[in-house]
Amino acid sequence: MRTLAVLAVVIAASSLNARDANAQGRYWPWCSRYGWSTVCGFATFQQCLESVSGAGGFCQPNMMPPPVPVRATAKRKHRSRY
Image (cartoon, rainbow, N blue to C red; front, side, top):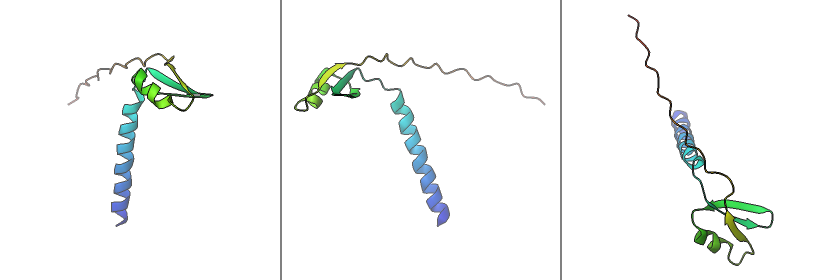
């Protein structure tokens, strides 16, 4: 029974790590500002406007540059020794 619980925890942790890694590369071009708080998580200006309506905030373009895609390096093939 203990092995099953450990296995469930390991599977849950690995699935969370995979989802977080995919989210890191996402670039959001619009930010909302509420006083000292900034939230950059909007794909369109309209989404940002709907978020700040009634809250007293405003929208602005994201000042951070988009992430540069990382090229995958080719793995070297090692010669097998017989």
